[in-house]
Length: 444
Image (cartoon, rainbow, N blue to C red; front, side, top):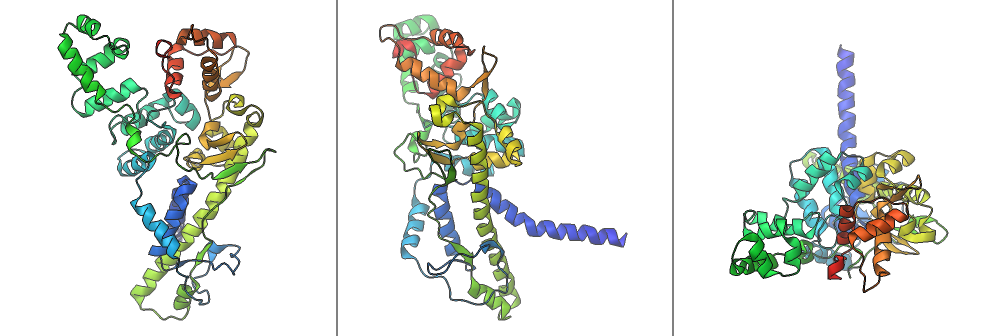
């Protein structure tokens, strides 16, 4: 029995040592390249045990494993420019995703709902609307549709009102609900008479709803005052905006995947701080504080190295699974799920999800979010399957080539795709149009 207690205590001690590194690795892995430099500069400012490696000195082979009793050395050099960039980053307007992630971190939800919500945040378009159905998200993440719907409802309670809606109408209804106006005439018009609203048929709306034209005009004015794009008051963070995108990865024309240019300074645990410990020059309180800061420094350095390795591993597996991309672009993508990449890499699905979240890859066909390479399968009459992303691309091509005098309705699009062997519902096509920001046929 004493032996058993001793073994249990040893295991508990080991977990306490590993937990901070594991937590730091997961946090760093999720961050996109553009958010790493402010984080590192903040750490350099706050942690005396972390320092930049001088340019004339090579980086150690394993900077994350320095000894507490490393020999003393001079302290880290100052960096005024880095400090200025750090201050700028602290006062910069947050992106929508940053804003939502902060709220998610404070939300009370189970781990699966948290994971689904984190994935959904990364799929929102420039307006803050969802770009995937619950079924597609479930297929990509390996989570159940019920969990995805729970996560969607959770996000829809976040600020700004109207976020994470499946359509413009749903976003406007969420905004009305946030104002306790779910039972208003404006909400009724959105729910029941959207086609007439889009055509501004005031008299017809009044007749159908049994109210006066004046009340209809008031309701329409209330709807018009709502925000059709809840995300636009935030700093842009999608590839189709003017914001500079720092690709985390680069795909060369020959199919080779490499890390993007990283602006992070090389880091190490401060040798002077380690020297203070080695010389036994500190009282008990200072010694405990410094040891904790050294552990933090090691955790950050190790997490950054682990992030690079995991990103490369995941990206190479993705491109191996998508050989048609270099030849045909998005149209050449196959159905691919995160569960498939997890199986190919030996990583957990949640690790793959964190690696993909918010990351971009520079390719000969443009800079794309890494998650663009994932898509649920749609049934094909040819015995195979087409990815939802490829079908959206095909919908965009068909509409771009349509006859201006005979615009393609959603039913016409469905028939054309069916003739090509792809079975997709008219409702799904309408959703794809909204994702592509293409109005219906009678409004084009």
